[in-house]
Amino acid sequence: MDTTDPDIYFDEKGHCNHCNDYYDRISKLIYQGEESDKQLIQLVNTLKESGKNKEYDCVLGISGGVDSCYTAYLLKQHGLRVLTIHLDNGWDSDTSVKNVKNVVTKLGFDYQSYVIDWEEFKDLQIAFLKASIVDAEIPTDMAIPAIIHQAAAENNVKYVISGGNYATEGILPKSWGYYAKDMRLFKSICKKFGVKKLKSYPTFGYKTEMYYKFIKGIKTLYPLNYVDFNKAAAMKVLENELDWKYYGGKHYESKFTGFLQSYILPEKFNLDYRKATFSTQICAGEITRDYALTELEKSSFNPIKIQEEKEYLCKKLDLSLSDFDKIMELPPKTYKDYPNDNDKIEFIYNSYRKLVASKLLKR
Image (tube, rainbow, N blue to C red):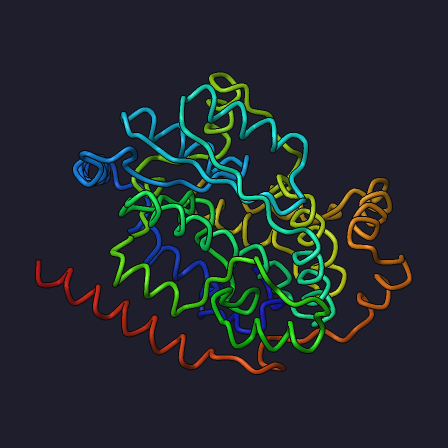
């Protein structure tokens, strides 16, 4: 990590706040050996108990990527009945589509694909690109929990399973992303830059999240935090047992996400996601700092293929190359440049975290 994160600071030893936070806090939240093994068994038992007399024990969002596919594999190993949900937003790579099909078929899980209205979604993506904020993935990041929670509620399932984990995603600067559940920001950008009226797009603001959590009683669990999760080892398991294939880069299971993180963010915002990924892997002991620095000397995108990827994106979004170049030339902005509910969301989430912490202390 470096000063491309404006909020970074270093101690007298030259260690940054991200790494110190990882060792002080996050390292205690990843796999802890026997204690984590017990917690995983408790989690599995909770899911099975909740699923009694129901068709499913839990709902899992699956993208075709390593984390969600390995989570599906893990759940199968523990005998859980899983409804898998996939958001088809029009950007799946051919490899990720095959991965999803192979994984759910070989594991014997039921599968539902939610095909989003492309004209609405295309308009949303263009609007967020024109807004010139790093959070161009908000249209996808909002829709995914919306369809997953909807499926859970429809099937009377009380647990949503996520492939998110601290082992590979423990470090991510706050300035590199924003809440996808801020409906005020979402609506303000749609109003300013959008053209189409949304009729079927599934929204999921913080109020909707509270409804599902407190009224419907649906909770989200992260089982990968209770296993010794190593991405390289997980990929080998998936390849050997589920005919899974690697899609060429972090988040390249989605062509849009891959292009955004490898090209748009570093070229326009001087933001290289690899720094956060490598930093997490260094702290987890998976790679060395020297290896990471050597990798960072290489371009984040393939210079030979990038023009082809750019033309593909523009054609799919009905943008000319000159229109795209104009978007890239717009001055970078943040959520603060638009109406937002950041203070309200921060207060709610901080209060909730304190409530959870106090309950844990009383046990």
